[in-house]
Image (tube, rainbow, N blue to C red; front, side, top):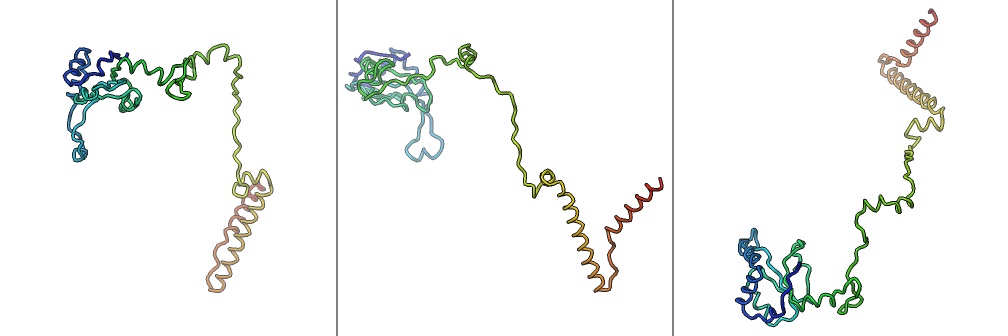
Length: 235
């Protein structure tokens, strides 16, 4: 709730008058809090003419300055601002909403002309109106559960469609076998041919150097297969 006072405050000339006014309106507690929080700044700001820090006090908003700024300027934490120059950094310093604001009567009456209302546009600004909320009812859960919205909503699609991973058949043997079942035979023949060529090369090198020929792994495999076939035939 804003504190609105008479326009007589705008004619204050002395700080003594401002102090008496704040004490009578029980606003001196905020100024006392500023006195209590005044402390030395941490960091290099001390070297740059910013030695002390303190909390903010009340904000006095006026329409006509008849000496008011000089009366309040010497009270720590108290700031003054003209109603035409309202600043969000003054009304909510540090983004914290809820600063104690003292309005003069003429400044408070001037707000509707400056910013307009939801029914009437501003007279000081061209086609300016107060921003309106997009939703008249902000209870979203109640809206979604209402029958009017449930009737127009479609049924949820519970069918799960999974994406098919495309693989390269030249790198994936399973995909190649789906396209060409004979690919397994071709691959095995290629491996056998490569082993045969390596065997021939090793024999040629052994013959040239006079060394014994290396064992043939394919011959060993063939003998094992032959022995297995012989055992099966005897059974």
